[in-house]
Structures are given as C-alpha cells and as structure tokens.
Length: 195
Image 1: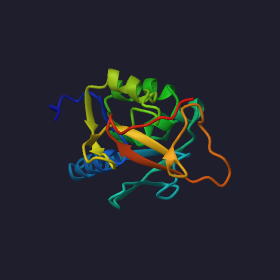
Image 2: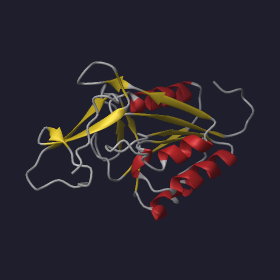
Image 3: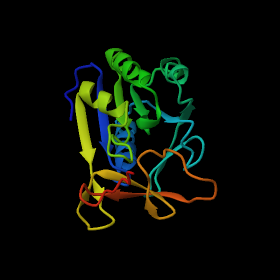
C-alpha cells in the first residue's frame, strides 16, 4: 500500500452505512499490530453502539478505543493522548467537528499513519463534514458500497427511516416514541421527503 519512507500519511475509509467501513478499519489495525506497530484507536463519545470504549463492526469484531468528546476541544486532545503510537485510528469521523482535519494533518506531519473511517453523506445525501474534507487532503481514499435493501444494487446512500417511512428533509430530530432506523440504499431507491 505505502512504501516505507518514515513519513506519515492519512488514509480515509468511507461509504454508506453497512458498507464495511469499520470492518476495514479493524482489518488495517490488526495488520499494523501484526507488523509490530503500536496502535491508538479513538471513537466519539456520541457513538456507544458497541460499548463505551469499543470500536465495533456489524460483523462482530471489536477493538479497544479511547473515547473522545465530539467537540473541537475534545478533538484537539488527540495528540496528547498518544504514547508514541505510530498508527492512529479514528472511527465515525463524521461525528467529529471540522477541527479533526487539522489534527489528522498534524499527526501525519509528525510521521504517523492516520486511518480515519466515517460516512461521507448525511441521510439527505449531502456531504457529511468533516469526512469530505479529510478525503481531499488524504493520501489514500477508499469508498465502500453496501447493498441496497430495496433493489440489491450497490448502495451509496444512508436512508433514514422514522417509523418505517423516509425521514423528512427538514426534520433532524424525531418525535418522542417514534422509531428511528437506517438502511443502505442506491441513488435510485434513496428517498428524502420534502414538502
């Protein structure tokens, strides 16, 4: 993937939900560990689906991670939380603020391999910052697709559902008692209700 030059770089793993982003992140971390590299993994405080201090994939694989506040101040603490690790992983980058881009750039400039995973689109099909910004400055970008739950085509969109129906474009929250879920969908099957 990368010639050994003792320089740092940024890798971005992106795509829709259910496309295997975290699974790929964990695969890269396992390979780094096999190569004898020390790894530090970080996850946003807002994402506790697999346990508070765990990166987890839908396939059931996990990795211990340090929880970081999903604020500008929280992101800026990443470098001081390191203890010499050569590989720095950040999962669910879409939940962090734009300051993550500068932090990743600084870590790479310091000679570290920075591996970032996160979805690049909101449920509306719009850029989900800071992932698109990270894609622009990264040395390596890999975009994964899931399988559309409606037609079986490659899925690149995140379909937000409220009580089983497509979410309204202008409604970022849900009513109390409503059930929120997500599906992977292709461009043709992705629906965002507008008035």
